[in-house]
Image (cartoon, rainbow, N blue to C red):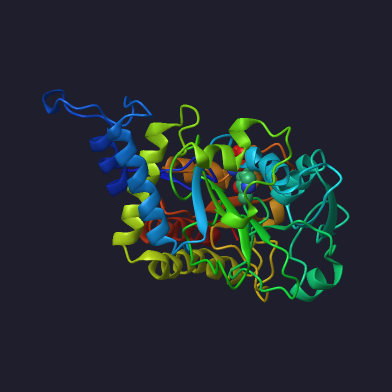
Length: 377
Ligand code: PMP
């Protein structure tokens, strides 16, 4: 017991305590301060203008976003972007795109995209809908539809625990669209090398709170939206209006800014990647050395094990032991390991290790797992 609830949920999540304290200071002024916090600032006020400018500037600095890209804080979450991407890049539904499907969220994305474009799918799903790997770069290069306006990948499949540790450099120079919702700010991004056209990340995992989504768009991809695109999803409309075309979530943007400052001060992406790798290693090592008591669907030899989300089962999904594991975890203040998603995740629990989970907290989880195994294996 640590005296703190340790939240391993896939989202929404905690932010590091220093970030939560700073958010509280900025967003909720003390009565004597005579200022409005970001909860209450008009989205068109100079005060919020400074908050927005700060969040944009620090995001660009921390993520080393090159000058040919624009940054937008959008609404509608990841699902909003599942529609916004094809609507902005295909001027009519007959235009084509290629989707790599390697799990829950890329599958969901292509289903939504089919309303607005004609997708070719390169799938790594097994017949039962599970997924434990990604298609190789060679396979993507061989199967990509050359008429594609973009190639879509999800760089971390949150449910399946599959992560692209580096974005691929494909022979095809079709712009890459990346759903980085659950791994954004955990590692550097090769913007130019990977020919990234658009990268988006809903905030609720690594950079803040639900309600705002960071969208980073290469400028040459603007001005080609389907005319039916709602203004709220149209990148060009919102960028032309300085990101305040309508009332944007002022507080949530402030939170992203505070989070980005914390990442910068903690050493940027090199440090973030090292910490993420170390936290995940604690849990994977324990699973790999458990003689099968704990299992994980993505093999030890795979280059795609997610450092953000570690799916694991207890005694091959033994219901009684799994429930006991969850109850005893809860008694220690460890929560968020079992989630109810609209998708079947089978026997697996999942440890999500975003920035709100420190290395020491990941150690507490590994320690608990080890203790549980000693009692029940
Ligand atoms: N993409 C990924 C990788 C996700 O993990 C999720 C789940 N939050 C989504 C998209 C969907 O995001 P939202 O719930 O914000 O629509």
